[in-house]
Amino acid sequence: MFTGIIETLAKVESIEKEQSNVHFTFSSSITHELKIDQSVAHNGVCLTVVKLNNLNYTVTAIDETLQKTNLGNLKVGDSVNIERCMPANGRFDGHIVQGHVDETGTVSNIIDNNGSWTYTIAYQNKSNNMTVEKGSITINGTSLTVVDSKDHSFSVCIIPYTFENTVFKTLKIDDTVNLEFDIVGKYVAKMMGK
Image (cartoon, rainbow, N blue to C red):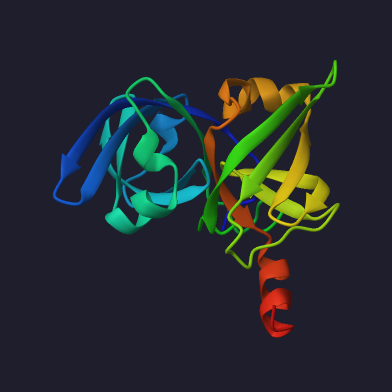
């Protein structure tokens, strides 16, 4: 389980295709703390560390993951948000994040509020996913609060710290982002027959 509180960024060092899988090798400031078989969220996608080599580590994404997330769009030199699993005795600072992306969305608007930024994200009209104002949403692994909720779009506000220490500073209109909707909301929606 994750909390959506991003620890740091990881940079793509290499991408290797093997059949329908892709092996991503990343460098990060916490590589020396990672272990083989450890789960790490990359832009909100839970992936297992399969190899360590000095300051680099490797994870493997299968075709299912590549089809449902923005990881297939990564290029060497790109950065992703990363977070290790929450320890059982750790503080719970964000919200319950599983590291299982529900779908991708598209950045449809960015407003500079002179001290914060408002990002509007659109997602598929055919999905049953939903947001509520002041509810939780995870964008590229970052736990955020929904400011404005509409059918198939929502807005979030980003503070300067989050902007500077996550991939939000590199996002542009029409970029694809990974979305994990609030787990409690998903269960309630299913129970209500939405």
